[in-house]
Amino acid sequence: MKTITKALGIEHRFSTPYHPRGNGAAENAVKVVVSTLRKLLGNDTSKWDDMLPVAQLCCNYKIRNRTASSPFSLMYTRQLSTPKDYSNPSINKNSPRKMVTEEELVQRAETMAKVVFPAIAERTRKIVEEQSKKFDKKHYLIDIPNDTTVMVKLPNRATKLSPLYEGPFTVVRKTMGGTYVLKDEMNELLHRDYVPSELKVVNIDESSIEDELFEVDEIRDHKDNAEGEREYLIKWIGYGERENSWLPAESFSSPETIRKYWTKVRELEKLEQERKAKLVKVSEKVIRSKETTKTVKRQKKSRKEAMNEESSVQKRRSRRNQK
Image 1: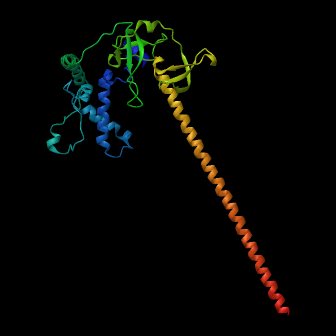
Image 2 (image 1 turned 45 degrees about the vertical axis):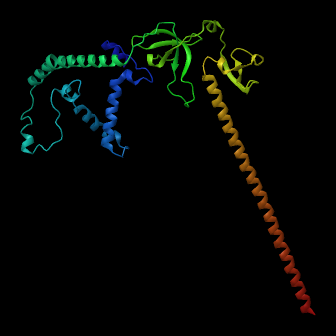
Image 3 (image 1 turned 90 degrees about the horizontal axis):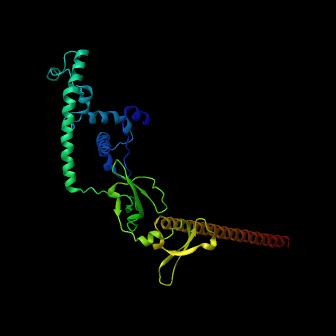
C-alpha cells in the first residue's frame, strides 16, 4: 500500500483509534455490508463468506444519494443485468438486442468522463457543503495551542467508578488531519495522536510543574494511615529498597500504576483462594482415605472374629460327636 500511494502521489492518512467519525465513509460501508449479510443469512451465519459476493453485488446495485447512481452503473457504464426470466416477452423487449461494439464503449466512456463524472463531482461538492453547514451549527471546532496542558479521555473503563480522564499531558503540535500530538511529564511522546473530542483543557499549578518527578517501578503494598487515607508503598526506578516511601493516591500523575497494582492484588487473592480450595479437597480426600482404611480394618476384624467363632463352634460340635 505504501508503494502504491507513493507512485500515485496519494497522501496516505490513517484514522484515529476510537474515533470512527474520522473515517465515516468506510465505517458506513462496513455497516451496510454487515446489515446486508445479516438479512441474506437469516439465523445461519456460518456460511457468511459464501454469501459475501451476493452481498457485494446488492450493495453495488443500490442507488446512492450522493451520486444519484449505483456504483455498478458508474463503473461499467451500463445497468446491471439482474436475475430475471428473460424468456418472458414483457421483460425481454427491454433488454438489448445486440452486443455493444468497441466504438460504443469508447463513446460511453467519454460521456462518463466529460459529462457524468463532472456532474457527480459538482453534486457531491454541494452535498458536502450543506452537510458541513449543518455540522458547524451544532459543533464548535476548538484549536488547542501548543504547550497547553490537557487531560485525555479514557475510551475503555473497567468500571463506572474508574477515572474518566488520565494525564496531565502537554500538546506538542497539531497534525494536518486535525489531531494532536501529546507528550507526558517525562517529555516522551504518546504512542498515538488524539482528536479534540478526546481532550480536556485544564489549568495546572505552575509550582507543581516545577516539582521533580520520579518514575515508579511498582507498588509493593498498601495501608490506611491514622486519618483513614489509603497510602501505597512505592519502589522507585533507579533506587534501592531503602528508598521506598509511602505516598497517597494524589501524588501519582497517572492512575494506571494504581490500577495495575489492584489488578495484581485481585489475581493473587484469586490464586490464594484456589490454593486453599485445593488444600481443602486434598484434606477431604485424605480424611476419606483414612476413614476407608479404618472401615476396611473393621471389616477384616469382624470377618476374622466371625471365622474364629465359627471355628470354635465346629470344634465344640466335633467333641460332642466324639462323646
